[in-house]
Image 1 (cartoon, rainbow, N blue to C red):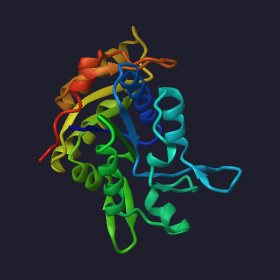
Image 2 (image 1 turned 135 degrees about the vertical axis):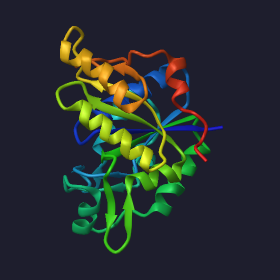
Image 3 (image 1 turned 135 degrees about the horizontal axis):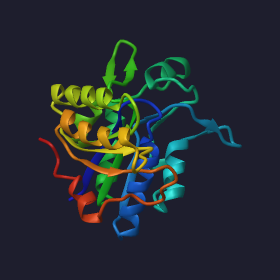
Image 4 (image 1 turned 90 degrees about the horizontal axis):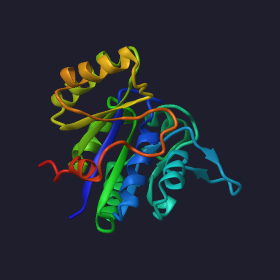
Length: 231
């Protein structure tokens, strides 16, 4: 049975795509048929044919080595570097949950493990035009637990704690935390690791240093984060 995990962040540009690429790389190199999926992606450039290229998906594909076609990875792609709800207001083609789930179920029939990436932080509006769709709606619809990516530096205790609190309010399980831009020996980063575990109630499963090309977690520990679907 296919298993899934939702990679979310404490905010924008904390390294969700980078960490997702490392995760897919480890799964792929372990012989696992794995897929990447992101419901909505903003801030993309156009190719020579004028079509938008889903940049995050392309980066993950190139750095992980997975053979998954790029067209499978993201159903809603926008050019404006703003929240998807605003991007679709400017460009059209608003995010539709039914279409997102159709693509997700197609992937579930083809891949063993699906790594999904959120947009921005967890409180991200995907659609707000008379219809409302928020990132937690997609997470719950997919029945997935979450892996939280947080910066290792100043401010992360508050950000990680508030995100974990919000997830509990939304009945979305948090499986673990990954600290990005981590510096071993940095007293702030080391203390933040302990404090993030305290305020979130889950383990920091890995710390990612700048330039890492591999995720410092065993394949068995990584696979354990992809638990059965949340009912």
